[in-house]
Amino acid sequence: MAKCYRSFAAYIGDVFYDEIHGKLKSYIYQNKDRLNLSSYSISAPSYTALDDFHVMSVTFHESDNDRIDFQAAIQADIV
Image 1: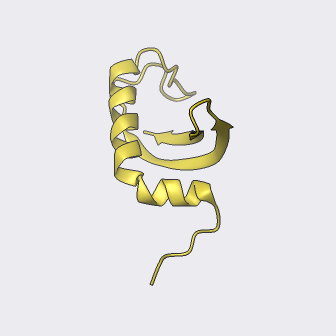
Image 2 (image 1 turned 120 degrees about the vertical axis):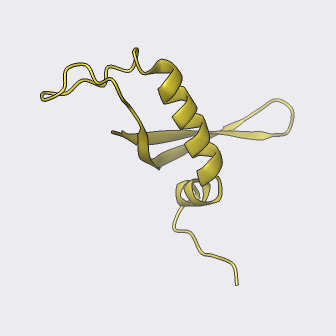
């Protein structure tokens, strides 16, 4: 029986979890100095890791070559 999703964002987050997680993890590692990850208790963290992420929204765009492109807004939880 097929799994039922309440939104397309939930579907993207579930079906493509591993791919999104891998890309986010790589981006955070390569750009940790530019992400402004400081807090009140830690001014300059030396270690950063992706804890989890959430697909917040999905925006669709019609392209010129009979395709529908979409862009997903992701919220990442970084420790």
